[in-house]
Length: 92
Image (cartoon, one colour):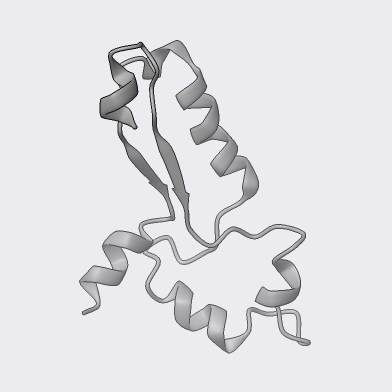
C-alpha cells in the first residue's frame, strides 16, 4: 500500500504493539496472588524492559504518526514492544 498510495501523498504505516497491560488483559496477566502468572513472567523474560506496555505508550506512537513530524514515514512498521523483538531474537 505504501508503494501504491505514496504517489498520492497517502502515508501507510502500522504500529506493532507488544504485550499491553489494559483492563482487558489484566485478568490474563495476573494470578490470584496479584503477581504476574508464570506464562507472563516467561514472556517478559524476553522483553528487555521487563514489563508489559501501557495503552498510553501505543497512543504516543499513534500521535507521532498523526503529526506533521512523521511526514516522511511511509511503509514503516513501528514496534512498541519494550524491545521484545530484539530481546526474543537475542535469546535464541
